[in-house]
Image 1: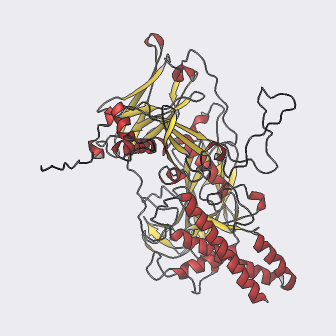
Image 2: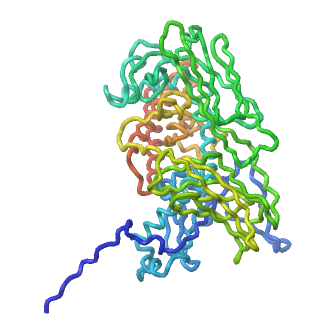
Image 3: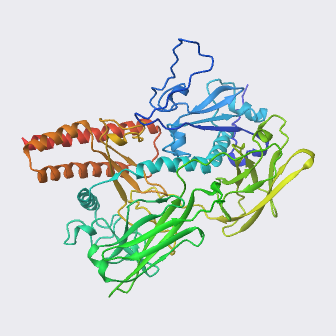
Length: 611
């Protein structure tokens, strides 16, 4: 008897009836970083601890979340629950590669409760197996919803940026080391590969101040840019100090920024210097002064007593333009400023009978096209339980005032603050202005209503998977709206024992056995190369050098070591461009071991040469 084999066609994601899947609940826990040594707070004892009873919390894990996980080193930090039991998990590779939170990966736990899904959807996930979810259309739909919800969450982005700032505040590398490293990088690239050759390349006759910089003309001005933008031009250009990707400014506290020419001897030829503040941030006041060998900017954010603290961080751009005698094109520099206070904002006073509902995101809100939702920050004066309790008396809702309605979701409020997640519709076009109405509805149909405007904008350009160097910051249009200091495509930092409480590869902090590390660039910061000056072997070698060499010789040899280790880190980063790690922790461990082997080999070779 002949049997007919039926081939089951897989269900395509686009054909999946998403509206019929049901709902999922996403909870995110971000633990505070480990306390610095000597600043640990005494743990409070449980109230039922008896006299003489010893009680100690487990705090010796590799990361802050280690003691909460079934497997150490970040495994199973993203868990999926069915009826309160774990049925599936992801590790912190998901947090790094899908959500983009590299600094939070060792402090973050995500729990997804899928009990709200339709029975058919849960059936497709389980499919008779108790070992994990079936990786099909339903699992893909859940993953895309998690990414769309968390990727641009303002609270998570703020925590990631705060962790980044700790790295940016490390000491900058020595200028001689930077010059040597610039030469190594320049000589590493063949002609026509990622760089515009000419003035300032390694081995020519120009001054050391020019090494590593490339200039182009864009819209009639000259600024420091990647070599594939604009056309080749000549020095001088403008630079700034401190050399940080983002200038942090505290409210009601002035900060001075130094502006210089590159090369420095061209400063005396400046005939005019103008400074433009950001018209979108009226509270930012900028004063400038042209001095003998440099310019001085004084930034001041004038925050009134009633300034809404939920608006922090505030981002602004400052544009500096200068004209040099005898040179046709003006020189321009864009600075990126982030304003936020040091202290956490106090919890607001919440009531049982709310009367206030407002949007705290700056308007018009920018909604990016694509599959990723946009978070709109909101606040009301009602107690959290009015929304989160079972059979809660209040609920949030929102609608677009005209046109088809998008998917809109709300987070649970925390201390009166919550976010509204808007998923853009495919028919929305860049430049379109939308108006949304948000309502909080309570007992007896009582309503609190507010509204906000939103502009649809194009999504950011994805990075091209090639091996070209990616200088940062980049120029995205003729108005230089993404500007910051123009400089080589990296920052060189050094770290000592006093600052070991920083992430190092996949570890929570540095040790005397770590030689160096790199931090990949993003839209806020360039590539960061970090060298450990207190590496145990380097410290011993430095002491031995001091006994048999002059101070100048010691400095020269240490410069050679630091620049070569930084160059190896630079090459290691180049090898990662366009690639994704299957296991971020394992890949980082391999890189950590590699740079240590290179450092020990370099020290050994230099030691043998000395003898």
